[in-house]
Image (tube, rainbow, N blue to C red):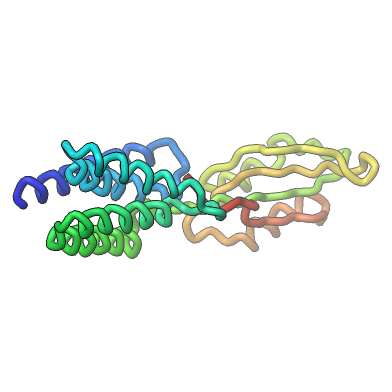
Length: 210
């Protein structure tokens, strides 16, 4: 039991290190980061149970391969929960009832703590800013001072003509500064684009899948 606890804690620590380093310079969802923390410990339990038992190893491989036949794509945490349920089922089936209960409660507690904490949730939410400008307006660097005032970061995503070439439509990926007012930013933009359309929206994205 002592070796099992040490291995589980080590796996969680290593998963935490991987998740934290994965956040650097990368855009990661909270679900994905929590998966990185928990998955090493779940795999560790499976390896301990299967170690040296060829028959069990084959059965586990078949059981875990069923995960890919889910009809709906899932978030990282949903897939992790399936793996956890399978690992606990394997442990109980092999008679390790105490380990199954201890591991399920421990991992569920860690999962709960990570979910309610700010870990991975520095979710500076990315949005899409769309600005319409007249064709005679040189929009390059025209709004940069406004962007610097209200945005943590921004990057031009798309520029296209519209309305028979009389308008340009600019799309940017932006992250608002903490506490910045979207209304004030949009009002300032409108004073420079001739009061044409300005839109700030969440990007259309699919379910967070691994």
